[in-house]
Length: 320
Image 1 (cartoon, rainbow, N blue to C red):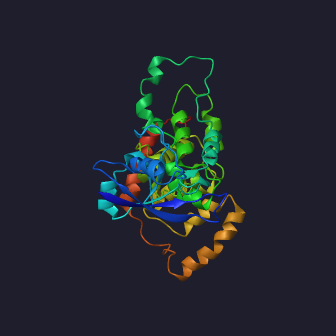
Image 2: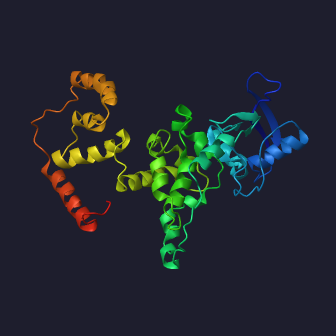
Image 3: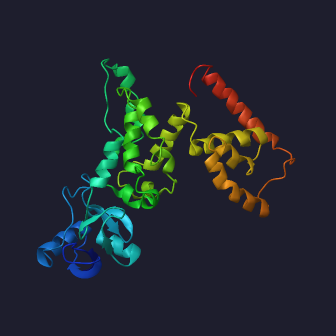
């Protein structure tokens, strides 16, 4: 079968902007996109540039955008991709500088990884084998990351704010955070609270969708948030959104849209001033609930029971 593949080409030494070029290749049954790219480079266009190594979905080198979705070229069947989309359009990863054609500069990705100290910093005491027994389950496959960069390429938060550490780096941070051999848990959690940290994720779920190893980076970020709240990092606006949301619903049996923004920003007068126009618009559009509306007793009872269970599980003096 003869297949047409449209590739994004760009040589910064010659081209002012990226452009598309369509190639035709004979594709026997079972041929992967990587196989087709290697054939094109050998037989048609020797200048074609891309990364590849293991051809077994292990190294992560051949990650690229295929019909707008981040995929490993060695795992993409040409026939299946054509059947699903009716075309094959290949581009380099987004959110990263292009070196040439389909190869991108990975240094920004490595910088984010280094920023979270993605390795165990051991202490003098050797942990017992018993303390490590449940570690694989606690990692939730965070150690399965092959550092391909697909999640960062798809990340909408990083697209808007390049200072965001990104899903892969934060998943690595979680992997070390649950390791009992590490001695920097508190310092790492503290460093992740600021701008670009765990609270900048908007939970778009794209990193989960494109991850070739089912690491589910967004879920690891959520777990880091829970660990942060349990450790007492509750003063940021984003953290207060979670804690105050639950408190309002538990106290009133409903969400009070008027109270939530105020409670989130009451520790930051500047933030409070910024949201005042939003409060006025809410009032004009009838989004401020009637203050004397009866509470939902059933929901209040559910939260009351949960608090009782939490109090029993975490006696006074313990973090919970």
